[in-house]
Image 1 (cartoon, rainbow, N blue to C red):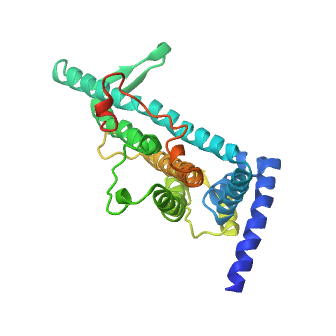
Image 2 (spheres, helix red, strand yellow):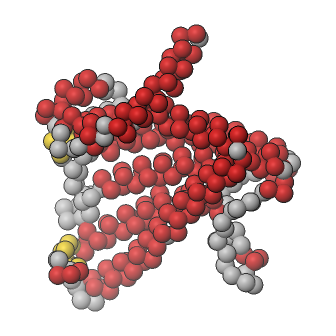
Image 3 (spheres, rainbow, N blue to C red):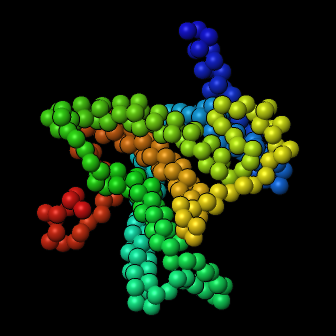
Length: 297
C-alpha cells in the first residue's frame, strides 16, 4: 500500500518534469524525420507518463478553480464551447453524406457510370462508384464520433432515470460528479490507450502494442517504416480505413474533455445551488414558437 502511494506521488512529480521536457525539447517527439522521435511520440501518446502529465494539468486547473470560482466557470464555458463548435461543424457531414448518396444513385442508375471524377482547381481525383458508396461510412462515423460531446452538452443523449429524476438538485450534482470522475474519465483513459496503439499498428511496421517498453521500441526504430492501411472490404472499395481509427481517438478525446467540463459544472452547480443550473449553457433552439419540441431533436 505504501509503495503504491509513493509510486503515485512520484509519478505526479514526474508529470511536471515530462511536461517541461516536452515543451522545451519538441524535437525529441515531433521531428518525425528522426525515427526515434516518431517512436517516442507513439510510446508517450498512450503511456502512463502522458496520463500523469494530463492529471497534473487537471489538478492545477481544478485547484485554481477552487480558489477562484469564475476561473472554473470560464473553463466550463471554453470546454463546452469547444464541444459545441466541433459538433456543430461535424453535423454538416450528415448533409454531405446525403448529397453523396443521391449523387451515387443518380450517376449509377441513370448514367451507368462506373467511376466518379472530382477535379477542384484542375486537380483530378477519380475513384469507382463503389469507393464512394463505401466511403459514406466515414461521414456517418464522423457525425457519431465528433458530435458526441455536442450531444452531451445539449442534453440530447439517452438517459435512463431510475433514481436520478426523483432526487434533489444537490444530490443530482453529486451523482453527476461521481459519474464523471469514476466512470467517464477512467473509461475514456483506458479506451484512448488501446485505441492509440490500435491506430499505429495500422500505420507503421513493425507493429507496436501497449505492452511494449520504450527501450524495446527505440531498438525497433532502426527498421520502422510507414505502412498505412489501404485494404478495403472489396477490390475497388473504400481503402482509407485508418481514418476511422483516427475518429475513434477524436471521439475518446472529446468524451474526456466533456467529462472534465461536466465535473466542473456539476461541482459549481452543487456549490452555488439550484439557481445556477444551466448557467452559461449554450443550447440550440428551434426558434420562436417551437419551444414544445425543444430537447426532442
